[in-house]
Length: 338
Image (cartoon, rainbow, N blue to C red):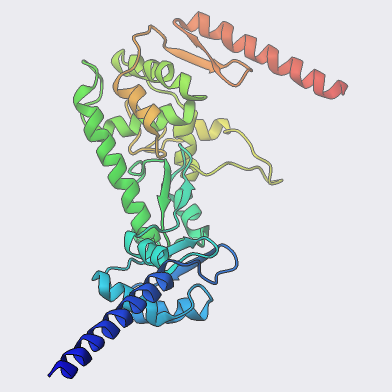
């Protein structure tokens, strides 16, 4: 009996030693630097299993043994917790860190910047040309003015339809936040009208500092009432907001016949707001319309410096126009002399 007791004790000791050695091997296997020679990006596709991911990671030289990754995930209860996306992996990443990134969803993010004042068709073309996005554009596209121009972050697998839906949602959230705090006695009665007017302000203003003054001019005109008389509204009626070109393929300004052509957007021939937005306005233009500064400006014209000269009276405006024409003549003479 004594011999049996000694044998049992020995077996227990050997078992504990083996377990200890196994634990030490396991810990070393999951924490030591891996074989990855340089930083890389690893993609996990929708519906992919841990077995597939582990196998591909070993084949790609990211980990030494896919069985260790699978064992580690099983022991942590994370076999089905890995996320989809592109993962930026540093050189020599360990199995522990690799699994942590997969589970945390620490994926590569891309960005796309949508400039303010583009039409919906122009935004759609930018998304169509970005090969980091997937899928077709929705049909029909969102209405003019429904998209909020911003810089948007996205991950691999994001579709063009998804991104457009986000732009609509962001614009909805912005107008929902700003509309209740709008100024009193505005000549607009709905958020949709605010977006229409903001789109005109967006196309006319030269930079952030002019959103307020330009908005005040149009607010004053609508309250007077006077017609907006905004060239971008005419352009939208002629070309749906696309640049105008002459027969030689050069950019051009509006012809007088176009200014006089009546369309649902021409604010020279029609009272009030255009029929729809003429572009997608940014935050600044929307804020400028909903809370414009109190001014007695009714006119503005380019001042030759990239901005505008604002006027209270028609006579003052005529002087500003003459000053701008004089500036143009000087610039033409200077260019010809060089």
